[in-house]
Every structure is written in C-alpha cells, then in structure tokens.
Image (cartoon, rainbow, N blue to C red; front, side, top):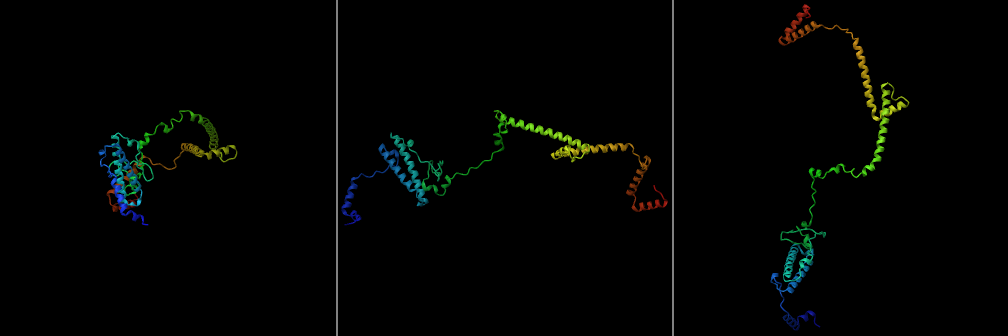
Length: 311
C-alpha cells in the first residue's frame, strides 16, 4: 500500500483538489479603508478577523527568544491592528451596528509587576502606543515603566510655620475641661507637698543661720546640729558662709574705727616748705640731666662732697 504522501501526489487526488478550489469563491481581501465597506455584516466579520490576528500576535510576542528586532516589529504590528480595529468599530456604529468602544474593555498599560501605569505616549509614535509581552523588557522600554524615586522636598520655614496654630502650643487642651478634672487632684497633692517642704526647709535654715552667726559649731550633736547639717547638705552652706563673712567684715570695720580715733604718728611729717624745697630740687636734677653732660654732673657731685653741701 502506498504512503499518504504518495496518495496525495497521485493524479486523481490532485484533480479532485483542483476542482474543489474552483468551486470556492475567491478569497476576499479586507478593505484598506473601513469607509469602503457598505455592509454591516462584513464590517463585523472584518473586526472579528482583526481580533483573531491581534490574539495570535500577542501570543507570539510573549516569546523572549525572538530577538529585539522581531519583538519591536510584532509590537508595531499589534498597535497598528489596534488602530485598525478602532476604525472598524467606528464604521460599525456609522452603519447602525453595536458600539463596541463602550462595551469593550481596552487593555491597560501595566508594568512588569502587573501594576497599572499611565504612559500616554512613551515612544513618541502617537497617542495610545502600547507595549506587549517581552517588548516591555527591551532596552529603553523598561525605563518607561520604572517609577522614579520620589524626591522628598524639604519644607521651608514658611511652610512649617504656616501649619502651626494655637493648638500646637497647647492652648486648646483645657477647652473641653477633661484635662483639668484629671490633673486637679494631682496638682493639689503636689502643691501641698511643695509648701510643706518649703516650710520645713525655712525652719531648718533659720535654726542653722542662728547657730552659725552666734559662733556655735554646726557639726555639734543634738537636734540643732542635725538640722544645720541637713541644711548645709541641701545647698544653703553658701548663704551661711556669706552671712559669716558679712559678720566678720562688720567686726573688722568696727575695730578699725575704734583704732582710728586713737591714732598717733611716730614719724616726723614734712611741712609745706620742706615739700616745696624737695619738689624744686627734683626739678633742678631733671633739668641738669637733660641739658648738662655726664662729666659735668660727676664734677658737680664731687665738688658738693668736698664742700660738704647737701643741697
């Protein structure tokens, strides 16, 4: 028995195939312009044919091993078919058919992760250009889907102060009265503690000041000594020391006044004539040192020593 290929090549089979093709109508070619179509059924048929072509090419473009040039050509063909489909849909509406533009869900642009992105004209080839399948990973196309990092703009001083109101400073905290009711007991308790502590410290301070001024030893035993020591450790020692210094200065000042009343000079004091003579002698020396030579001054001193002259 002959093979299938040999059967197909036989004269009888070829004759039958030729007769069947002659009976068929010549294959119609899709009009170049949708406006040339006058029949609604034909327009529907051409639209369905375009959709089948789009599906076949979208399935083919998913293959990343086709190469960059083939992927770009396929993507261009798909976009061209999408534009042609929109033309046929408008023609169908003009012929009184269904409006597919409202009911059909147009594919949205998504990035590699499936997130919808808004790319109105990424390639400059016209509005609505889309990328499909492996064409999204081509060089120069991936950057279109990458979101640029958000630059955090530093706010100016004016923008910062523009949002500040009275509530920022806490002026609205007491308006509802809730905070006042919650803080009132704690405030009263703290106020009583502070007042009692202040009275205690003042009482101890007065006792310590009296003990120091009177000359008693602060570290002495007994209740007053412990109170004074407690005050000194609480930071009152500076005031006590200042009070002690003031008392010592006052005593020294009183002693100086008493000693000044009985002052007696044990050294003879020069009178007015003696002071004038000494001033005149000093001026003479200054003039001689200014206008006389050193040798002349030496001779003058020697002469005074020989004559025993002291003036």
